[in-house]
Image 1 (cartoon, one colour):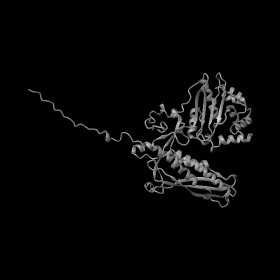
Image 2: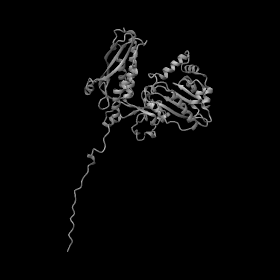
Image 3: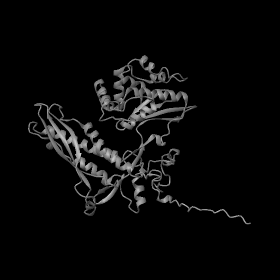
Image 4: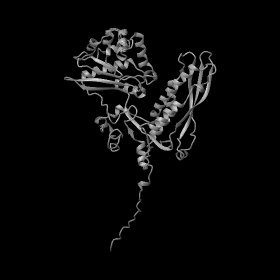
Length: 451
């Protein structure tokens, strides 16, 4: 008798559609860097500029004092599509509360002032200027901070350093073949580093040697070699020597020299490491100074740490820093670029206000009579209309539009120029891998400078 076949029950196949499952990965906002940078400029960047300018005083400093208080952008006057159709700029008005103090009578006048209309970012991370859509390309530049490089000498490398602040005088250190250490301030004639240390207050040779005795232990005694070449023998002589090198032809007195050094290195309006610069200095020199306004001006401890590091590198013969690595470069986004122009305009307005203060009747003058917003508006509009970094949006297709908003340029104010840029700076660097697309760069004169 034949065996009965077992019954097979089949369950219908479950078909899975992976294309319909959109929970796997959240799509990032690919232009968030543009929008967040603009938001930061509006919320904190402007307040930093206003606090930097506060207070504006008349030339004597004894009659009037002007202070910027709260500020706010109003809603844009025109709709975006209306601005495009009528060749207008999509902009928003800025209003600032200003306080004017009469120092003679103690009277305080407060007024809300209209400070002009400024281009406003659209939801797409672009700007509408005179009816055309423009985008501000981010700038890839050398970071503020300190960089150590090696140069071939006879039988060994000689090390040099560059101290680059966000704003102010550059300091360039170098090691001579005889072991003496020199510094150049703003590319002027070189000065022995011990002269600069003396000018900053180290009067005795024993004090200077004490700073470096644990590090200057090699065959070449770098501090001794520098002291031999140092023409100064005290603080006053050092101050006069520094002044002569920086301002040849001017009458060199101790007071003039001290005033010049105070202004050049300790005035925040003239010298600022910037937040990035202070962070990079702390990282490279192994110091731990807070990133505050008072520590963003020149610090004597930084100068000592840089000289110590140069001596250490000369003794150990290690490799210097790679200035083309992305760790030594940074990106300036739209907010920072516009803030720079806003600061330029505000400084022009400050000079105008000071002139008007000296010509006005201090009893009847009001804040609105002293402030003229035109230089500020003109500086910002000039940036959007004619800067190398403000470009017509590439609207060929959505992908070209997106890649234009994410583009980086090494050119522009404070950056490189096509003519001066060599092969090293244009070349693909190992630190680019996984961060910057090597295929995106154009062929021709801009290769490697636009990424």
